[in-house]
Length: 357
Image (cartoon, rainbow, N blue to C red; front, side, top):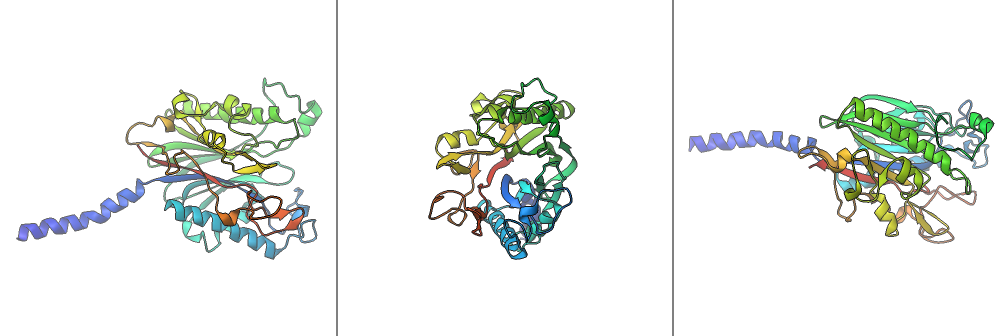
């Protein structure tokens, strides 16, 4: 009897350790969200942020800014409610500065996430940047860098002449190198150059080339590293920038060494969108994973198929969607026809899940 009691006591002591191990080795949510012009109400020197000032065209006030912060925080909290865990990594686009990120993380809905920030100012003339939030309990940041946009390429650039190229300013790509569960990762947060009618395809091709070349350098430096490229690409998965220059593939079966898998390609084929133009779905908010995450060795982190039958999720809820009017069924944006309508963003967020294989 005494022996049985000792065995039971040992098992009880072991349970918390096993629970902690399970929690540490659980799933990792990796997401992206274009938060649509997250500006504070103060002017930043050198930025064209005048429409987001109290006296500007949008009459941007502390009250409106507070609504915007609360809305974004609600979305992040609801993703946590759906997945059961806070994002390990969350890329953001269209943030003005570090200050707006710090304000966002003070929101009651997300304060428990304990996110940390990686952010650099970019040369974009409007002043919008990319940023990365991460859970320091689940990822250790090794280093980070900005990848500036340049025209040192063999791609024929027809959108701009040489002088226009010299004057061109856009968002840098944010690269964050981290370690998750003992494995090296490189995360790239992108906001590729915007569409300009029929022009700009070459600009986005060059942006994709910059990212891809850096992923290959990281793969040489850290053999087996797992790369995740996310962002507002201003292109759909099948477009040349992503399928060609970034080597994005539609299915896991097509992925070879050096390729990336884009789980949102099949979703778009099936009519799912992260934003809409003239009623038609688009997915610009992509998350692509390297072959090392598709063909992950046993016991290491790999991309997981979700309950929706896909390897990715476009997160949308009725409160995030226009319920009436001209834009019914599309993301519930902050402004419509110049009027503040207290929405969330003109993009839905996206996410993938990584788990031990």
